[in-house]
Length: 262
Image 1: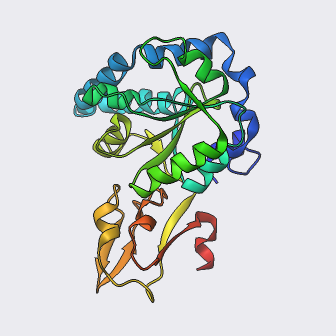
Image 2: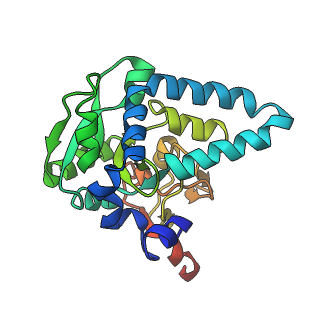
């Protein structure tokens, strides 16, 4: 388990704890203003983060301070965490209101309105009052589960994001091509933009036929092919995307805490 599980989840998966989705958290003035700023100023926020990171992290005497400030932000204010499809579906059954909203990254990068981010509870109420994202589309937990499964089959990575940790307000469904923060995470390895999931992929080598589909679809460069068998390395984020593209069902996700038993 990660430090968030200890601090915000009583030692269990912190993002499955109902208190981290409670409307009373979102209703604090500081958090409400932060949520508004993320959606109202997303172009400025993304542009500034990418620009500053690209410059500051290349200057030796600035890099250490810049890393500290970036990592504080991505831990205390807007923390991202990779989750499996199974956990994403479970999460959608926790809060009362579940809604779809246009993805800010798709707006920023491509100027497209694509409803693929899932908002929870009071966050949806706040965002629904921001003209560029209004109206959000309310959906039930069952519809959200089907929506997530469809995205998963297309190779989408599911991540939860906080608005002033530990309040979780959204599940983002993106990939390295259309997510600013996933791209930033890959571009600057020292940044802790997105935390790894609590599972890792495991290959059954007795079944694996070495086709390489998992290697081609992995967005974290976590798969190598050795002697016609797939192997998972330490880059694995536990997203589970590789499972969907294995034609023989040789890949599964297992808890990290169970690795020592294998």
